[in-house]
Image (tube, rainbow, N blue to C red; front, side, top):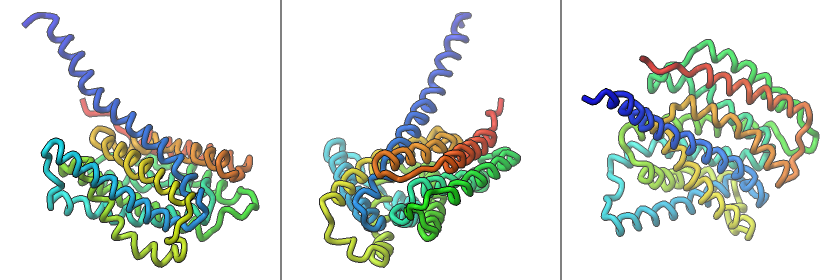
Length: 313
């Protein structure tokens, strides 16, 4: 063997190893940017968020199955199997809870409250990743969660008196967060069992649509139909922005990026979402809340960062 083969081969292997991780990280960032803008789009029409969620699920389901059928006609690729449906359905049920209650909460509280409460999800995802997938964090790192909780408390209590944020809306966000945690865990499980990203999303959207229907009927009332032109525009944007783009990128990233790393990138989402809400919706941000945002973001980032373990040599 040539003496130069070793280093050259090692360099090639290193590049091959980094490439999936680099693409995965780029996918997480793209997903985060899409999600941040979507929160303001949800509030834009001024109707019950659960109505927007239901129609967005319908739009996403139609788009995904149009894509799946076009792909089959072009390439002959098989449709999702019965096994794929069985594996992906639990994730879809949790997703229905997540999207219905989080969208509903956004129309009953401020974007700042909703997204910073949502940003506490890693405090549950990290130990859950250990329990379900053996992703072993450094447990002492969870102490940084106290900083996040302190920051969140300041955000929730230090807002303006404009009436945008409500306790009811904040509690609905908590329900949505629990749905998100379950969705993330079962999505990663489906990925590990070999369900392809496009097939996974094509299953999740219609199953979640069915599961979200009773929630929309109970909570949306007359907002479910008829819809204004603004509501239709919002639904169309969300169907593409998050229904196809953001979730596909996130699901793709889970192949090469640990949940903890995904979470540390996502810690920047609430601050960006709050900026969009200020710019597009005119939601006020107080100086006190700004300080709380720094604490909450720093705390969550520290939790997920210091929970990471170096790869075994």
